[in-house]
Length: 307
Image 1 (cartoon, helix red, strand yellow):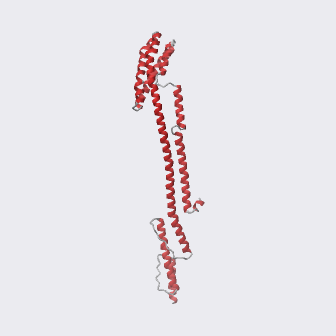
Image 2: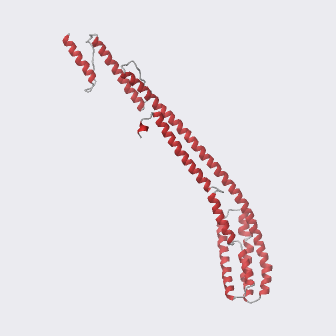
Image 3: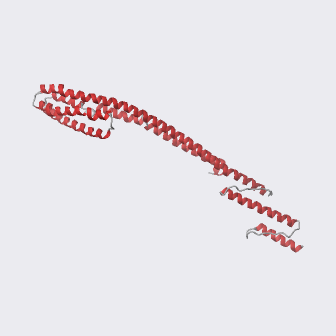
Protein backbone atom coordinates (compact mmCIF):
# COMPACT_ATOMS: atom_id res chain seq x y z
CA UNK A 1 0.00 0.00 0.00
CA UNK A 2 3.03 2.26 -0.34
CA UNK A 3 1.64 3.67 -3.59
CA UNK A 4 -1.54 4.67 -1.75
CA UNK A 5 0.39 6.37 1.05
CA UNK A 6 2.29 8.40 -1.53
CA UNK A 7 -0.87 9.70 -3.17
CA UNK A 8 -2.12 13.21 -2.51
CA UNK A 9 -5.26 13.57 -0.42
CA UNK A 10 -7.44 14.35 -3.45
CA UNK A 11 -6.33 11.16 -5.17
CA UNK A 12 -6.78 9.10 -2.00
CA UNK A 13 -10.37 10.30 -1.72
CA UNK A 14 -10.77 9.55 -5.43
CA UNK A 15 -9.61 5.95 -4.91
CA UNK A 16 -12.07 5.55 -2.02
CA UNK A 17 -14.85 6.98 -4.20
CA UNK A 18 -14.00 4.61 -7.07
CA UNK A 19 -14.02 1.60 -4.72
CA UNK A 20 -17.37 2.71 -3.33
CA UNK A 21 -18.77 3.11 -6.86
CA UNK A 22 -17.51 -0.35 -7.85
CA UNK A 23 -19.01 -1.90 -4.73
CA UNK A 24 -22.32 -0.14 -5.29
CA UNK A 25 -22.34 -1.27 -8.93
CA UNK A 26 -21.71 -4.90 -7.95
CA UNK A 27 -24.45 -4.70 -5.32
CA UNK A 28 -26.87 -3.13 -7.82
CA UNK A 29 -26.07 -5.74 -10.48
CA UNK A 30 -26.57 -8.64 -8.07
CA UNK A 31 -29.83 -7.11 -6.79
CA UNK A 32 -31.11 -6.53 -10.33
CA UNK A 33 -30.26 -10.05 -11.54
CA UNK A 34 -31.83 -11.56 -8.40
CA UNK A 35 -35.06 -9.60 -8.88
CA UNK A 36 -35.06 -10.47 -12.59
CA UNK A 37 -34.67 -14.16 -11.79
CA UNK A 38 -37.47 -14.39 -9.22
CA UNK A 39 -39.83 -11.75 -10.66
CA UNK A 40 -43.22 -12.55 -12.19
CA UNK A 41 -42.61 -14.37 -15.49
CA UNK A 42 -38.93 -14.69 -14.52
CA UNK A 43 -36.94 -17.92 -14.87
CA UNK A 44 -37.77 -19.37 -11.43
CA UNK A 45 -41.38 -18.24 -11.66
CA UNK A 46 -41.81 -20.00 -15.01
CA UNK A 47 -40.11 -23.12 -13.67
CA UNK A 48 -42.50 -23.26 -10.70
CA UNK A 49 -45.54 -22.65 -12.90
CA UNK A 50 -44.42 -25.33 -15.36
CA UNK A 51 -44.07 -27.81 -12.50
CA UNK A 52 -47.55 -26.99 -11.22
CA UNK A 53 -49.03 -27.16 -14.73
CA UNK A 54 -47.39 -30.54 -15.32
CA UNK A 55 -48.91 -31.96 -12.14
CA UNK A 56 -52.28 -30.40 -12.99
CA UNK A 57 -52.19 -31.98 -16.46
CA UNK A 58 -51.45 -35.42 -15.02
CA UNK A 59 -53.54 -35.53 -11.84
CA UNK A 60 -57.22 -34.56 -11.79
CA UNK A 61 -57.98 -31.74 -9.32
CA UNK A 62 -59.69 -32.91 -6.10
CA UNK A 63 -62.18 -30.01 -6.11
CA UNK A 64 -63.44 -31.00 -9.57
CA UNK A 65 -65.44 -34.27 -9.55
CA UNK A 66 -64.43 -35.37 -13.04
CA UNK A 67 -62.49 -38.39 -11.69
CA UNK A 68 -65.41 -39.30 -9.45
CA UNK A 69 -67.69 -39.25 -12.51
CA UNK A 70 -65.32 -41.44 -14.52
CA UNK A 71 -65.04 -43.99 -11.71
CA UNK A 72 -68.83 -44.33 -11.74
CA UNK A 73 -68.63 -45.33 -15.39
CA UNK A 74 -65.95 -47.86 -14.45
CA UNK A 75 -68.24 -49.32 -11.79
CA UNK A 76 -71.00 -49.61 -14.33
CA UNK A 77 -68.87 -51.80 -16.61
CA UNK A 78 -66.87 -53.70 -13.98
CA UNK A 79 -67.92 -57.16 -12.76
CA UNK A 80 -64.83 -58.20 -10.80
CA UNK A 81 -65.75 -57.79 -7.14
CA UNK A 82 -62.18 -57.07 -6.00
CA UNK A 83 -61.88 -54.28 -8.55
CA UNK A 84 -65.26 -52.91 -7.54
CA UNK A 85 -64.15 -52.84 -3.91
CA UNK A 86 -61.12 -50.78 -4.93
CA UNK A 87 -63.37 -48.41 -6.87
CA UNK A 88 -65.68 -48.01 -3.87
CA UNK A 89 -62.66 -47.19 -1.68
CA UNK A 90 -61.31 -44.77 -4.26
CA UNK A 91 -64.67 -43.05 -4.52
CA UNK A 92 -64.77 -42.55 -0.77
CA UNK A 93 -61.23 -41.14 -0.81
CA UNK A 94 -62.10 -38.68 -3.59
CA UNK A 95 -65.04 -37.37 -1.60
CA UNK A 96 -62.82 -36.82 1.45
CA UNK A 97 -60.25 -34.98 -0.67
CA UNK A 98 -63.03 -32.90 -2.21
CA UNK A 99 -64.27 -31.81 1.23
CA UNK A 100 -60.70 -31.11 2.44
CA UNK A 101 -59.98 -28.80 -0.49
CA UNK A 102 -63.39 -27.17 -0.09
CA UNK A 103 -62.51 -26.26 3.51
CA UNK A 104 -59.15 -24.94 2.37
CA UNK A 105 -60.61 -22.65 -0.29
CA UNK A 106 -63.37 -21.52 2.04
CA UNK A 107 -60.68 -20.21 4.40
CA UNK A 108 -58.41 -18.88 1.63
CA UNK A 109 -60.49 -17.23 -1.09
CA UNK A 110 -61.47 -13.60 -0.73
CA UNK A 111 -65.06 -12.49 -1.10
CA UNK A 112 -66.26 -12.18 -4.68
CA UNK A 113 -67.73 -14.03 -7.62
CA UNK A 114 -64.90 -16.59 -7.73
CA UNK A 115 -65.55 -17.60 -4.13
CA UNK A 116 -69.33 -17.73 -4.71
CA UNK A 117 -68.98 -19.88 -7.83
CA UNK A 118 -66.37 -22.14 -6.24
CA UNK A 119 -67.81 -22.63 -2.77
CA UNK A 120 -71.55 -22.33 -3.44
CA UNK A 121 -72.59 -22.70 -7.05
CA UNK A 122 -70.23 -25.55 -7.99
CA UNK A 123 -70.27 -27.12 -4.50
CA UNK A 124 -73.99 -27.76 -4.13
CA UNK A 125 -74.44 -29.86 -7.32
CA UNK A 126 -71.27 -31.78 -6.41
CA UNK A 127 -72.70 -32.62 -2.98
CA UNK A 128 -75.97 -33.68 -4.63
CA UNK A 129 -73.95 -35.86 -7.02
CA UNK A 130 -72.17 -37.57 -4.10
CA UNK A 131 -75.52 -38.22 -2.38
CA UNK A 132 -76.96 -39.81 -5.51
CA UNK A 133 -73.84 -41.91 -5.95
CA UNK A 134 -73.53 -43.06 -2.32
CA UNK A 135 -77.22 -43.54 -1.56
CA UNK A 136 -78.49 -44.84 -4.90
CA UNK A 137 -75.96 -45.58 -7.60
CA UNK A 138 -73.58 -47.79 -5.58
CA UNK A 139 -76.52 -49.64 -4.04
CA UNK A 140 -77.86 -50.39 -7.53
CA UNK A 141 -74.42 -51.64 -8.64
CA UNK A 142 -74.11 -53.86 -5.57
CA UNK A 143 -77.61 -55.29 -6.15
CA UNK A 144 -76.82 -56.00 -9.80
CA UNK A 145 -79.39 -53.53 -11.14
CA UNK A 146 -76.96 -52.05 -13.64
CA UNK A 147 -79.55 -50.80 -16.12
CA UNK A 148 -81.21 -48.62 -13.53
CA UNK A 149 -77.75 -47.54 -12.31
CA UNK A 150 -76.91 -46.55 -15.89
CA UNK A 151 -80.08 -44.50 -16.23
CA UNK A 152 -79.29 -42.73 -12.96
CA UNK A 153 -75.70 -42.05 -14.04
CA UNK A 154 -76.76 -40.69 -17.44
CA UNK A 155 -79.73 -38.86 -15.99
CA UNK A 156 -79.82 -37.18 -12.60
CA UNK A 157 -76.12 -37.69 -11.80
CA UNK A 158 -75.02 -36.31 -15.18
CA UNK A 159 -77.26 -33.27 -14.67
CA UNK A 160 -75.57 -32.54 -11.36
CA UNK A 161 -72.14 -33.16 -12.88
CA UNK A 162 -72.84 -30.80 -15.81
CA UNK A 163 -74.08 -28.09 -13.42
CA UNK A 164 -70.98 -28.55 -11.27
CA UNK A 165 -68.71 -28.39 -14.32
CA UNK A 166 -70.41 -25.24 -15.65
CA UNK A 167 -69.45 -23.32 -12.55
CA UNK A 168 -65.99 -24.91 -12.42
CA UNK A 169 -65.37 -23.69 -15.98
CA UNK A 170 -66.59 -20.24 -14.93
CA UNK A 171 -64.20 -20.25 -11.94
CA UNK A 172 -61.33 -21.20 -14.24
CA UNK A 173 -62.19 -18.37 -16.62
CA UNK A 174 -62.47 -15.79 -13.82
CA UNK A 175 -59.33 -17.02 -12.04
CA UNK A 176 -57.34 -16.89 -15.30
CA UNK A 177 -58.42 -13.29 -15.89
CA UNK A 178 -57.64 -12.35 -12.30
CA UNK A 179 -54.23 -14.03 -12.47
CA UNK A 180 -53.42 -12.09 -15.64
CA UNK A 181 -54.27 -8.82 -13.89
CA UNK A 182 -52.25 -9.83 -10.83
CA UNK A 183 -49.24 -10.85 -12.92
CA UNK A 184 -49.37 -7.59 -14.88
CA UNK A 185 -49.61 -5.57 -11.66
CA UNK A 186 -46.78 -7.54 -10.06
CA UNK A 187 -44.60 -7.07 -13.15
CA UNK A 188 -45.27 -3.32 -13.10
CA UNK A 189 -44.42 -3.14 -9.39
CA UNK A 190 -41.22 -5.12 -9.94
CA UNK A 191 -40.21 -2.87 -12.82
CA UNK A 192 -40.92 0.33 -10.90
CA UNK A 193 -39.16 -0.92 -7.77
CA UNK A 194 -36.15 -2.04 -9.82
CA UNK A 195 -35.98 1.37 -11.48
CA UNK A 196 -36.34 3.06 -8.08
CA UNK A 197 -33.56 0.86 -6.68
CA UNK A 198 -31.22 1.79 -9.56
CA UNK A 199 -32.18 5.46 -9.28
CA UNK A 200 -31.53 5.36 -5.54
CA UNK A 201 -28.11 3.85 -6.17
CA UNK A 202 -27.25 6.58 -8.66
CA UNK A 203 -28.46 9.30 -6.27
CA UNK A 204 -26.44 7.81 -3.39
CA UNK A 205 -23.38 7.67 -5.63
CA UNK A 206 -23.82 11.32 -6.65
CA UNK A 207 -24.36 12.48 -3.04
CA UNK A 208 -21.35 10.52 -1.76
CA UNK A 209 -19.25 11.88 -4.65
CA UNK A 210 -20.21 15.45 -3.77
CA UNK A 211 -19.48 14.84 -0.08
CA UNK A 212 -16.10 13.28 -0.87
CA UNK A 213 -15.15 16.16 -3.19
CA UNK A 214 -16.21 18.79 -0.63
CA UNK A 215 -14.39 17.06 2.24
CA UNK A 216 -11.27 16.48 0.16
CA UNK A 217 -11.17 20.17 -0.78
CA UNK A 218 -11.83 21.19 2.82
CA UNK A 219 -8.80 19.14 3.85
CA UNK A 220 -6.50 19.35 0.82
CA UNK A 221 -6.72 23.11 0.24
CA UNK A 222 -5.74 24.14 3.83
CA UNK A 223 -3.04 21.47 3.93
CA UNK A 224 -1.61 22.73 0.64
CA UNK A 225 -1.75 26.28 2.02
CA UNK A 226 0.08 25.25 5.19
CA UNK A 227 2.65 23.32 3.15
CA UNK A 228 3.31 26.48 1.12
CA UNK A 229 3.66 28.56 4.30
CA UNK A 230 6.02 25.98 5.83
CA UNK A 231 8.14 26.05 2.67
CA UNK A 232 8.41 29.88 2.87
CA UNK A 233 9.38 29.73 6.54
CA UNK A 234 11.98 27.06 5.71
CA UNK A 235 13.47 29.50 3.17
CA UNK A 236 13.66 32.23 5.81
CA UNK A 237 10.55 34.19 4.88
CA UNK A 238 8.54 35.11 7.96
CA UNK A 239 6.30 37.79 6.52
CA UNK A 240 3.47 35.28 5.97
CA UNK A 241 0.01 35.05 7.40
CA UNK A 242 -2.16 32.06 8.41
CA UNK A 243 -5.78 32.65 9.40
CA UNK A 244 -7.80 29.97 11.19
CA UNK A 245 -11.45 29.89 10.12
CA UNK A 246 -12.70 26.77 11.91
CA UNK A 247 -12.45 24.90 15.19
CA UNK A 248 -11.71 21.50 13.71
CA UNK A 249 -8.32 19.77 13.43
CA UNK A 250 -7.38 21.87 10.39
CA UNK A 251 -8.28 25.05 12.32
CA UNK A 252 -6.17 23.92 15.27
CA UNK A 253 -3.27 23.21 12.94
CA UNK A 254 -3.58 26.69 11.38
CA UNK A 255 -3.63 28.27 14.87
CA UNK A 256 -0.44 26.43 15.77
CA UNK A 257 1.19 27.59 12.55
CA UNK A 258 0.14 31.17 13.30
CA UNK A 259 1.80 30.90 16.74
CA UNK A 260 4.97 29.53 15.16
CA UNK A 261 5.06 32.44 12.68
CA UNK A 262 4.42 35.00 15.43
CA UNK A 263 7.15 33.50 17.62
CA UNK A 264 9.56 33.41 14.69
CA UNK A 265 8.85 37.09 13.94
CA UNK A 266 9.61 38.01 17.58
CA UNK A 267 12.85 36.06 17.43
CA UNK A 268 13.82 37.83 14.20
CA UNK A 269 13.12 41.18 15.89
CA UNK A 270 15.26 40.19 18.88
CA UNK A 271 18.10 39.08 16.60
CA UNK A 272 17.96 42.35 14.61
CA UNK A 273 18.10 44.50 17.79
CA UNK A 274 21.01 42.53 19.21
CA UNK A 275 22.79 42.81 15.86
CA UNK A 276 22.25 46.61 15.99
CA UNK A 277 23.77 46.71 19.47
CA UNK A 278 20.48 47.29 21.23
CA UNK A 279 20.75 45.10 24.28
CA UNK A 280 17.70 46.57 25.96
CA UNK A 281 15.47 43.88 24.57
CA UNK A 282 13.23 41.48 26.44
CA UNK A 283 13.83 37.84 25.65
CA UNK A 284 11.07 35.53 26.86
CA UNK A 285 12.02 31.90 27.35
CA UNK A 286 8.75 30.09 26.94
CA UNK A 287 9.81 26.70 28.29
CA UNK A 288 12.80 24.57 29.20
CA UNK A 289 12.83 23.31 25.64
CA UNK A 290 12.87 26.81 24.10
CA UNK A 291 16.46 26.42 22.92
CA UNK A 292 16.47 29.35 20.49
CA UNK A 293 15.37 31.97 23.04
CA UNK A 294 17.79 30.48 25.56
CA UNK A 295 20.56 30.92 23.02
CA UNK A 296 19.50 34.54 22.39
CA UNK A 297 19.55 35.13 26.15
CA UNK A 298 23.12 33.80 26.38
CA UNK A 299 24.22 35.94 23.44
CA UNK A 300 22.70 38.99 25.13
CA UNK A 301 24.56 38.29 28.39
CA UNK A 302 27.88 37.70 26.63
CA UNK A 303 27.48 40.86 24.59
CA UNK A 304 26.70 42.82 27.77
CA UNK A 305 30.00 41.64 29.31
CA UNK A 306 32.01 42.86 26.41
CA UNK A 307 30.27 46.23 26.54
